[in-house]
Image (cartoon, rainbow, N blue to C red; front, top):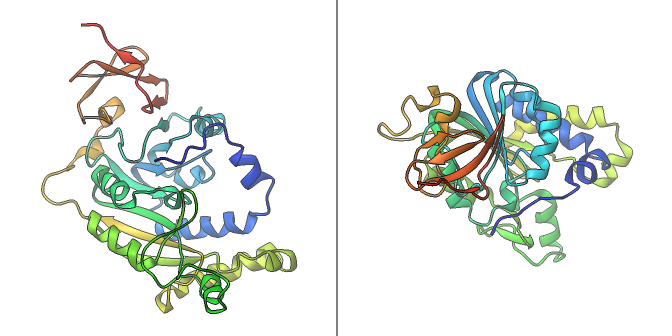
Length: 301
């Protein structure tokens, strides 16, 4: 099951018309601390309307991937004229890229919507080049508020239990130990964590200036060695693909980075489509927009 934001007003409702300047600012600080500022090819999984895209402009090529065509259209309104950008509608469980083609990757405010995290992480690890950086943010179930509520018997689920908790359909909080273990199983080495959004409370937002909250959070982010107790945890993970898988693939360009998401077969350009060499399935590829949610059909033999 996939959480689909198709047709949603996420950009206006959750960001533009909501009091989230603090969250936006501190997430940018965390991302700058963890992500290399430049490189060959970067992808954001679940990029939405491209809120964080300006942080990637040091890269030669920027891919914004989301399952929602609506949100990608909004991202294209701002970034579509930049030739470095490509916009890809696709399923996180079946990514349309050949192995090792991505130099760096991010996933922010997304994995809490993913039902099968191990499968998603395995697929992400497949497409990142050996030694590539993957910055992942996840919602932390073992945060201070949850610990206090559990101690006061005001919440039924146990924040110490390692299994994810689904508090609303397709909305999960994760224990840090559980997430870090699954990153390791997928082939990543986590070499840094940041504790983010400690001050995410309505009271503080009403009483404290945003600049003060952002400054304080920037300091608190560095306390992660003392314990991962914040609502949001950022991690920097290094891809550890073994053998020759993906070696040199991040140097490919153009349509050569793509494969058929169903079978991994090579795709060839045919007008405004990419065609699967194995069975003739056609996928929309118009300008810098690629749609791998559903095929257009099949090419005639």
